[in-house]
Length: 610
Ligand code: NDP
Image 1 (cartoon, rainbow, N blue to C red):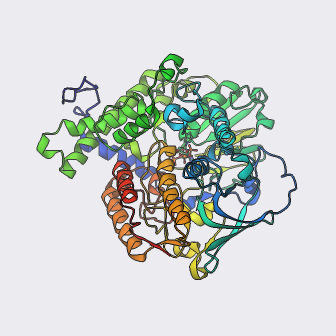
Image 2: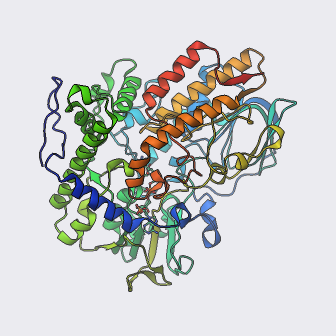
């Protein structure tokens, strides 16, 4: 593989260039691989917690809730969701002097995604030194560069304790109805515990990696063995915990469907502990080096004040194509520098030519993936398996994979890899049938992702009735309509957190901090100045749709060429129903700077303050 060197006086980064590849042939190969996997139903191919699997909406990590009196109270702010989004919003609110707030979550503790997901091998694939917020304030030193899920869950609880949030939280409480009372300028929120909460402001989110998604495979209701979703791991059945030790599986024939970011972490654990493991793979994930290791205390303690924010910002900058020195040298950085270096190799006058940049980055991306395919050959001894494990799609079509133990697991004698690129025929009472062959199983694990392709209201599990009783499910039936991703016309005093029409970041807590800073600024201003209602104007929202639409249009050719996944609404990028489908704003560096200028201007442009 040719590894050319970028210019600009930097030390060589040795980024792949793809210069020796036949671009047309690679494109053609990618298109053929995509076409095998595209399904006419798009996102509708999936099922959710229904029928036999309705219990996937239940919480396996907590017993029935302890009885409590319903709460009837008025206060300034209600935060729905006690994951990282809720925690960051709460801490940001406290920093701004907003103390009169409550939090509510269906879970029994803080943690959100990290509360639900406790599968064996779970880790964050973003460096803990930026992913875990407020390290400089809590003094916590992550044990490793990429920490396990239980450390993140524990850290969420540490944050809640340190900032006094337990007293403000109502757990095991499901929001059922949310209605705007224009006269009182308050939201009326009703829960399944009989609470009547009346906050002036509401921060909410649909929660992104919490509700299990199941494949719509014929016969899925018929399997007579053990079946569960990765985010509802049944340790009672498997034994062990997220660190492994699933001794009950020693004599079991286990199957797994799903080889995405979760599958990558689960497979090595099952391969080690199960009698046999059959991996049903529709699309292989491109897997780069992980290179995890313990934190060097001396290094950690020598970091100057403000280091975490600086690290987070520069990581986001390279993710947005800005050629800055980022202290993070990992798989993410190597990939982004591959794209950055591709642009730097262009003559200076062509670096702003969109088509030239796209072509250079495409070729470099092909080169980057060729290196990963070579890595498969160099790692997996079984040539047939190696051929199946090679990924043929552009890197950002799916969540990039990083692992040092995933590929080697396939060389174990007890591991079978089954290609289901055109689909699994059916699930039978005894196992999984593919092309006429039945694979008999005792246990089937679905690492098939989360409900992300449905509407915001479907994912949230409750509707919101705004001004004049208008339902959010109506307004957003065909996708989000927001101003800056946070505000929506007709829905005063509510802020939408998460993957809305906003600036996104690889390290999700960074995005959440920017969102929390922005919305808290608005709430603090309203509370201090007797403003009872804050709402986006129709004109601002319409203009924002045009901005988002233009970004989506520019990205469409890339998304259409991508293999299906939740990033492109399962191969149908025009399906705008979901939050992801209806637009993510890039580049987020610019977006965050614009937000800062907006706050500094202090004019609340695009909002009506009543
Ligand atoms: P994904 O949606 O990424 O992957 C689902 C997997 O299930 C894919 O391999 C998919 O195949 C497969 N699948 C779905 N339906 C079928 C079917 N009918 N037959 C065969 N295979 C099927 O879910 P994950 O849980 O892996 O990850 C979701 C997200 O969670 C990630 O993208 C990431 O953002 C986050 N995550 C983050 C982690 C972290 O470290 N920060 C760790 C784990 C997850 P196909 O690709 O063909 O659709």
